[in-house]
Length: 375
Image 1 (cartoon, one colour):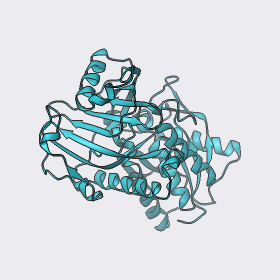
Image 2 (image 1 turned 90 degrees about the vertical axis):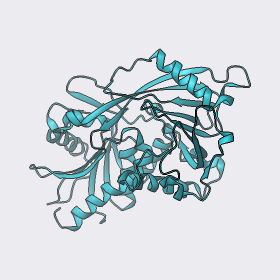
Image 3 (image 1 turned 90 degrees about the horizontal axis):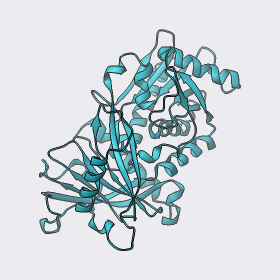
């Protein structure tokens, strides 16, 4: 991509920031408008976008454990992220992992019912993929596998991406954008900000290009997305004690996937997460807390043993995943008003593991647009 290319990225969760960094690495100039967290509505007509990744992203699980079906596009995205994180950590000492916010870890996955096929597609990512012998499985588990994987600290990783973007020249904005004037109105407001501040301007006769990585916010201003975007409520617990591995359990009778996710270096572990499609209540649910603790003890009993206070709940977090009917939307749209938008949202709870592959698809769409001489 040529150095004069210029893009405004709206949304700086893991999807927006990953795409921003990958564009910058290709010489594209950038403005970033940053989301504070998944769903904060200040009024009926405006949303606040703020450069404070620590304020809400603690709700994210931020681990690599794929949900994707074999041969699906999402499986390609997840595989790309696994390989990228492996490459990211290779030159680093363990003491340096915190500088990028990603940590290698053993992933153990249990299933109530045997999977088909018994050897999943992601086994090809690592020669250390293993099936766990039945004698080592917890009660109520039919099969288990293990492989090398990764967990991320949401705060550290998003800060790493944001700092990397700034180092490469991205300009960032902490503003409110309107949601009551549709997509065109929101883009016009974003453009006005950079013109007022004297930021970069698009070269003459070049289309204004945007990446819309606004997650669940997209339903507020993108035509047709109110019916497609589905908030999926998830509740997690933060408990004392840092478990040494990442454990997940797949249930046959409910939509939840239990995950025991260490927050490396903090002395704490996340146990999550429940799944409530269409629910938007953000208060803790005591029944879900009880279920998470019960199931957490069943798959990671050592987390609740040892020194006093270990396994004690120190926080209950509730967030809304940006799910979408038909799956994530990564698609280029040319508006009648002349703007070009790559929509990139609806990744549900897979944003971190989708992030690199999703970014590469978005960048490919922009590359094709530019190469065709339409800008």
